[in-house]
Length: 150
Image (cartoon, rainbow, N blue to C red; front, side):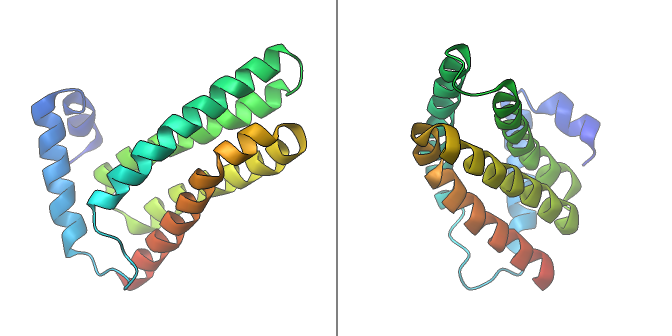
């Protein structure tokens, strides 16, 4: 599957189902470490984490207008979200474990940087993003392990 195919079908139900089914088959065939969770757990985790990210971003924007966080903080937050959102297309389209590992590592590094700044500026954002950091760390270790096993 190439990027153009994925992109043109991403926003339709049947295209999404086809992408998901093709990815699920590929993922099922990969060697995984003993600590790999069942696939359904990813949906549960992100179903909790994404609302927390949204709340943290909204709070950060509020703090930006109150001049308590900088535009750089907001830019880093948005960059992290964009890196996060680019992970799935990279995963589904390329199926290149090394590239996927680099992508998730970029997400985690930008998130850790964001957390260092958040600790100094806003403990609310810091604590809202703790589940994201924990899951992101686990997911990064899992992906690097999958890369090394395959």
